[in-house]
Length: 449
Image (tube, rainbow, N blue to C red; front, side, top):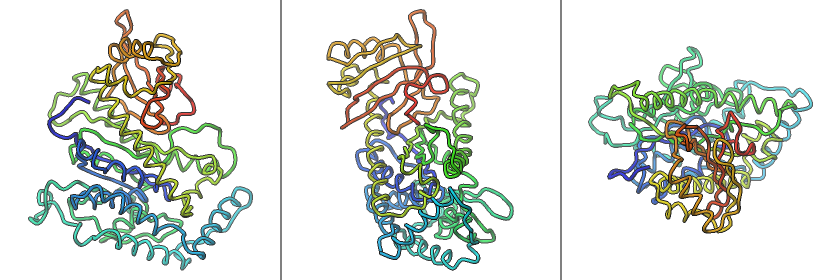
């Protein structure tokens, strides 16, 4: 990223995933900290299901001009949502047990229209949302979209995804149209087998997981320079799913990513067409896409999709902490990328740990060494600062490791596509690798970014 007089405009999209979106709470709390918002202007947020709730609370802090307050709101909501009392803990245990048993025996299902617990759960969720967000004060339409003259047009955009049950039409509730009500949030989070459909105006709505998860193209109205996606469902899986739980879980992950990757592909296609000069109209602008992905533990995979209903306080607080740590690495990686793109060898060197493992493979010169000062400096000067550049027309990823799509020019002047990966510990790079981009021969198959 080159230095800009104005902050880089960023829109953040929050994928839904039940309890797993506590990870999003940790990510958003870190991304809305002062050291980030001083450099990046958050111009829009979107979300679906649990991601809609996180996006709402982050948006509320931004609208109040206190982005740093987002961490308090997000952690407060998820603490209230945890199974803290003895009856709630027992119910949570029973839900997880029943989910595990479904791997071996068929278990009966009850319609939410016949289950009083569904009404109770929706009532509880409504009360928590109204506790942590003042909808009457926040839900003011934009005068450029409506006839209202009571709103600030510089307000960040909020978009929440849902689907109208009867017509099958996708719905994106839009803050600029004054559509962010508690019912709109509940509609985005109304999982069909748990809750009744939610009535909003003349429509009946289900969870946005069936439409846009999360809305991305709608964020283009905020004119971002970059879109950061907090992805709950991992793209890749290390082993073949074989049990009923594993198969159902993988289907859920793939379905949750389907609409997301369709929308991101559209943006990438436009970026590459702009770079080639195929599009010259001022209607389009290049947008960098970055994905912050949650990695799943082995225990979570064993539980399958039911883990997305786990409200154990320790589980949720662990997800929040994981999200915060992942986002912290992401922020450091942004600074590293900036130094790299500016070809500042000294600044790039400062990000590497004293004992850093460096490897490179085709199409790059084959090398493998544990960096000492001179070897690392030579590697940076000869490779990173000269021949390799980040390909901003393709998605960049952050998770257990941070991955960049890159371009490389060899000694014959031929250009190649590749991938760079960095693992951060305590703010320093402890492992750095160059190789083919995923889809060819990934640097590390354990990295599912």
